[in-house]
Image (spheres, rainbow, N blue to C red):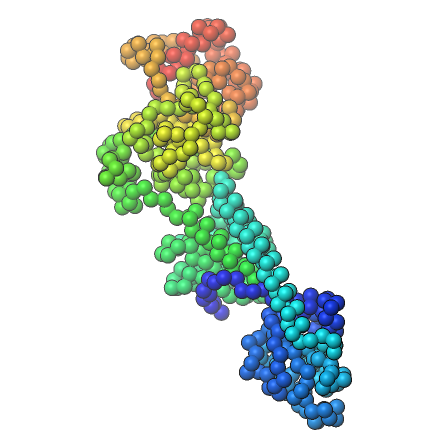
Length: 542
């Protein structure tokens, strides 16, 4: 049966009866009942009432000296021990502590028999131990358990936050949560399908019940619901109002603090699954429709990002990204887009592409950002270095120093194009792809592509392209040769880094470069030849 739950601070955790019995200073002894390790106590209460039922909340260790029991209770039928114990059990009492002396010298045999019959733990309290001492020991144990629980929650919060910062944040959060609860954690999409899951696989009955509980919270005012199926505790948490994402948790047992830990995970997943808005969804939908109906890119670009009050976005970056480990999923790609400041994300194969609006003050800057945060200059002309080390980030979100464009992101390798107008998006896409290949080859976190003025600008573009086509005509019919030559020259003739950039074997690179040299009739060890070929490759279109 599904029942809604209201998030609250974790209650004071119960303590084991075995922990109380282990206190040598108390001298308590269990006479009958289930094993002490299986009994939990939520408090201690003293009562000499013949019917303590109205005064118990449940879970207490009830302490009594038997004042309400006649001294002649040893005689059969003189006192209704069975009814007395039955009322304690009905009230939810966890255990009964009977104080020996001053009223009774021993625990009445009828009380022992009744406790054994009803399965109520019966503990003998020696004359030297006061009931206040027993109650104080219970509260001390509960305080220690509370402190341990708070530490557990704090550690879980830190672990979940660290998991959320990984390149695969959603699977990482689910794995960490499932490990903490020793169960199963599932993220359900708006249609009720499993998007991601982690932890031990439950049985079919539990899996179906958890999915049903997730559907229940999506159509119910409460954001949380719990249930118990086949001895497994289930819980579902709606991730944001009206969005349809739900976190489902199945655990074989429930400890104090588990709800708080799961709630922290739900908050993180709400942030990770939320769509990052840099423009209205209606405007982006309108832009898509216009593109499909034949509108030009520059006509629909103003609908995709930027604010009317801040001025329309006129230039854009294209970013290609690959996670350092594993393959990107839709949610981690969306999280990357949010970090870069754009919801325009395309996750295809192993590469995530993001279209990022450039701030008005963005310059054609670039460089290779090292893993330690500095920038290493490159001198081949395809990538321009930034001056100095990385500066603190400034708006917009995800931008590099002084708004120089998208910044490096932890756990990702990025290639960034030069800022371009919408009509040049295809060229920028190719720039970002080459920059990403170079970043992977040089093991850099980020590489920017940027055009800069030089001697090449002294030649009219038409003449430069004609010269390039004529010079490279012998290899023009084999795109793989031209692409390999471009990568090899940009990486200063490194066989290994070129192989990494092109995802081929280094011997394949050697064979292709040798083939280029033979077809071009050129000595590729000559720096003048390399310079001329690089000039031609930069001006070759198509």
